[in-house]
Image (cartoon, rainbow, N blue to C red; front, side, top):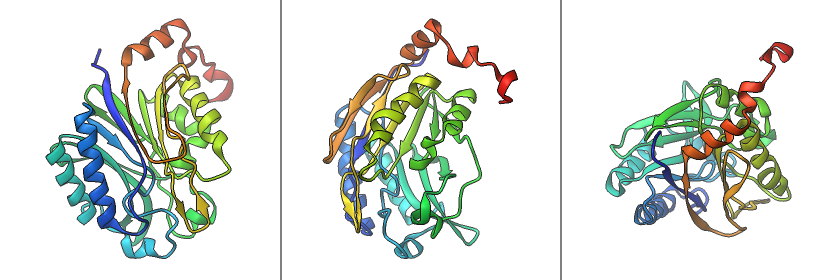
Length: 264
C-alpha cells in the first residue's frame, strides 16, 4: 500500500487577467506547501489567468507547451512540489478550459479539458473536452481530474471510480449562492464512489461573480478532512489509502452494483 499523500489546496488566485501576479503567488504557495511537507499543490479553475475574463481568454490562451507551462515547470522543480493549475489551452484553433499536472522534474504528467461546459460563461468561449476519465499514477496514488461543473454529474465521478481513480482533483470556480454544491454534493460524490476528493475553489470576485470559497478535501466515507471558509487559505492534509481500503472492506458500493440492471 502506498504511503499517505500530503497535499496542499490553494484557495485563492492572482489578480484576474494578470498571469505575472498569478505566477508570483503560485511560487509563494508552492514554497509554503513544501515547508508543510506537501508534495502536491492544487489550485482553482483557470487559476493562472482568471475565469470570468470574457474575450481576454482568447488573448491569454496558449498551447500546452506555452510560457505558462514553462513557468510552472520551473516553480515545481525549484520547490520540489508538483502543481495542478488551470489555464485556457489553445489547440487546433479551439480554446479549452484546461488543467495540467506538472511534476517536480518539470514534466507534464496529465492534461484535462473540461467536458461539461457551464452556461454561456463556458459555452461562449470554450470547446468541450472529449476525454474521460483522465488519470495518472502519482506517488502510488491513481489521480483523476475534473473541473467544476463536471463533478455535478454523477456519471463523471463514477467513471473515475470504475477506472480505478483513488483521489479525484476538482479545481473549480463555484460562485454564490451555490454553496450546497460544495457542502452537500461533493461529500456525497466522494462517499458514493468511496474515493478521496479535493474540490478547490476561488474566494474572490470577478465582474458580477462572487466566488464562495469553501474548498474541501473529503474522505472516502464522506467525512470532511479539510474545509476552508470564504477567504483565502492554504489547506494542508493527507490522502491515506488505508482509509479507502477500510471503507470498501466494510461496504463496497462499487462491488455491489447491479450493472446488469442499468447497463453501465
